Amino acid sequence: MGEERLDNEVDPEELRKQFWGDADTADTAKPNGAGAGDWGEPDMEVLRLHRRAPPRFPIEVFGDTWGPWLVNAADAAACPVDYVAMPLLAGVSTLIGHSRWPQATPGWSEPPHLWTVVVGDSGVGKSPGADSLMRTVLPELEHRMIGDFPERLRDWQAAQEFDKAALKQWQEGLRAAQKGKDQDKDPSKIPPMPAPTASDIAPEKPRLRQHDITIEQLAAILATAAPKGVLVTRDEIAGWLTAMNAYNPAGRAFWIEAYGGRPYRVERRKHGTEPIEIPRLAVAVYGGTQPEKLVELIAGADDGLLARPQWAWPDPIPFRLGREAPQTTWAIEALDRLREFDLQPGNPPHPVFVPLTPEGLQWMEEFAREMEARQAEAGGLLRSAFGKARGTALRLSLVLEELWWCAAATKDPTAFTPPATISQKALAAASMMVNDYFMPMAERVYGDAAATESERAAATIARWIVKVRPDYVHVRHLQRKVRLPGLRDAEKIKQGAGVLVDADWLRPPPKGQQGLRARIAYAINPKILERLK
Image (tube, rainbow, N blue to C red; front, side, top):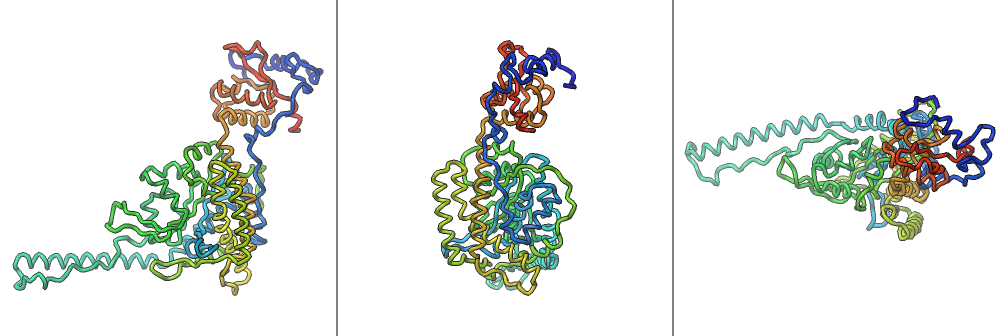
């Protein structure tokens, strides 16, 4: 095998002969029954933990302009297109923000903000895919949001100084009156305390993105710097999820409410006397995670939080260097039209409600009934996800409609009027994406989280077999030399191997190897290697 043997290990050639015999009789019966004809058909689904294969990403819903942009950006990042599209959806929903809400009926409207999470092992392109938007496009749009902020900050600072001077003058006059220095000590003639001209909350620099943030910080930003909402983005979403209650025991409940766009008041403030009023609490979220962390993230009671994200977990693709850079300048100019959307004047300012067309209403009713029927048959987190599906489709329909529009506006600058309604086409595309992509992805994510430790160990060993194509699986060799993730002790390796025995991947060691200090090795089904040719 080209490796130095450990103490008490058998010679690889001796073990190979024990399992396979001489090379010229490899296809005949072996001492332990290892001939290819004696094996059953291996269950290849153990590689996927018996979860469904990922659905194809529906690139066509993005149209003939954004679709090619996504493909080019994915090629440049050497990643699946899913890893570029998911941050785009979350980012666009933030740029639209509270300026426009999709409306199904007068009693049902939603903020457009989307939560998207990508899943994949390290090195499969999650971060490079997001960089197509996060590294260049959104920072430039955020820079353009600054506008007259420096002037507004100077005005506030000047007003603060004026208020301090006025208060000091009033206090001096009051003290003089109390000491009898003034002839007229009639309290009614003492001037009232001057009313402040500046808010106790300083103007915040406009924000589009946030990373690690507390509830109080987010509330202040939403109230002043980002009335349309912000995008909370974390390269590793587990950090955001696990830290929700770190500073506030009600943190998780706050973030659950940060999806619905309802009024919210933050009372617990370290500074200032007035509560922070948020007319519509909604933020967009984008992040990534690795498959091994799904169990930790999804563990516990279903409070609805993890039913809100839309998941993307594509299979990795072979690495290939991209030859063309994505059209960053075009993307910035197209999305800048969405940045310019603003809330309607009022107290508080309010969004423009963009209704479905009559045809879209009928489509929505049929889609909602289908999701309701599937929800009744589902359980756990998937049941909650089906419950959110119609709202997701409504939000996504507006995001797609505005994406199509801003792309078209770059070709014809005179067509600057945004859509007044959500077309049936947009709702059909959104509902198709929810039904055929997001819900299957949810099944894939939630199903993997339900896998047992033994099944995960089996999948890890199976992937190693596919990659290395060894002649046998030697427990001590895996434990001490290979050191697969999560398989550092012999008992876990044996548990995983036991699952692979049941799946006709491995054959148990001969009885002579079953002792306490035995050199335990499992024969590998030769049909696996045949399938990999």
